[in-house]
Amino acid sequence: MDHFDEEGKLKIPDKPTIVNELEKRGLECDKNLHVKQVYCPNGHEMIMPDNAKFDGMPGIKLFLKGENKEEIVYISPFLNKRHRTGGDDFGHGDKLEVRCPVCDVKMPVIGPCDCQWNGEYVMLSLDKDPTNRNAVCFCDIWGCPKGDVRLAGEVVAEYIRDYRL
Image 1 (cartoon, one colour):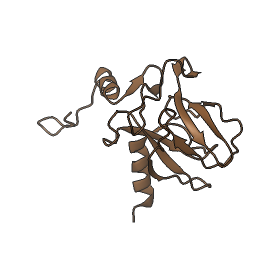
Image 2 (tube, rainbow, N blue to C red):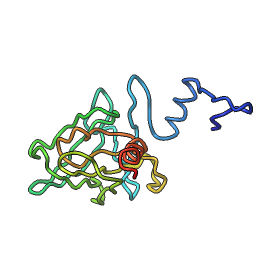
Image 3 (tube, rainbow, N blue to C red):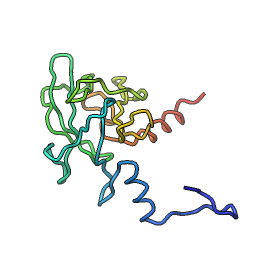
Image 4 (cartoon, rainbow, N blue to C red):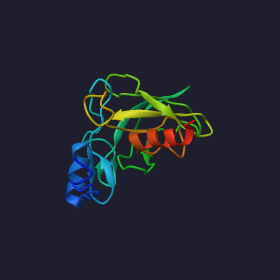
């Protein structure tokens, strides 16, 4: 999609064009922006119709391993909303390994979180091809304020802005 016309003027897309672009990238926009599919690095789907629901939408199923506990947890598919089901025995500030509930592969890290616990942003791909960087992420620390699902590109841009020399 070209951002400028032949005269060099910025093209402002209309709402249907924006919604279409979001849907191509695995996002859906009803009232709130949410992911409708996420995949582990091996291509396993982590949003299924029978997952725990958040505002009527199925959540993202994750296998979380803490120091003393491991459990299936569902997190909200809505961007920037930190809701979850399960994980009641994890403590505030616990560092977690985020794994696929199907194949147990560890989710890749895309960068550090600036939280007080030195967490890391864990990436969930929006496509079966995990190398294209079309992804969402969240901090791997239980209870971190940045533990909500965010667009990976926003987190990377924030990191570059805040830590560029």
